[in-house]
Amino acid sequence: MNIYIAGLNFSLDDADLNELFSEYGEVSSAKIIMDRESGRSRGFGFVEMPDDAQGQKAIDELNGAEIEGKVISVSVAKPRTENRGGGGGGFNRNRGGGGYNNSRRY
Image (cartoon, rainbow, N blue to C red; front, side, top):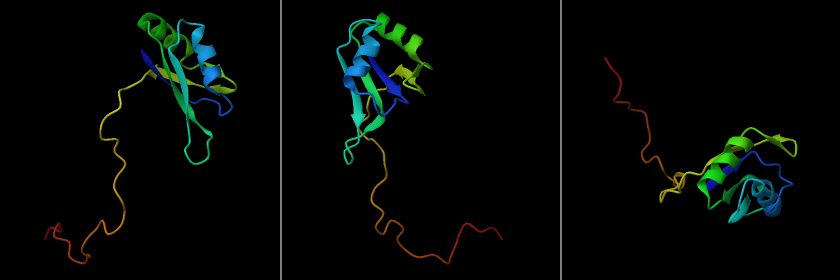
C-alpha cells in the first residue's frame, strides 16, 4: 500500500518517517519529497507498506496526529497520472487583442 503524508515538519527526514510508520508494520520505503531548488523538505512524503492491513491501521491511527508540532494528514496515495497538469508557457497565450466581445446580448 502506498501512503501519502502531508503537513510534515520540515525538520523530518526519510529515517524519521520510516521509524514512525514501522510501529505499524513492515515499511518497504519511506521518502520525504525535497524541493529541487533549495534542497529543503516540501512538507509531504510517501511510505510504502507491503501489508495493506498494516498500512490501513497506520493511516487510521496517524491521520490527524501531531508529529513534531504539526498535525499531519495521512491517506492512501492516489496513482500518478500521465498528464500532471500545470498549464503551458505564458508567452502569447492569448492571441489577438480584444475590443470586440461577441458574447454581448442585445
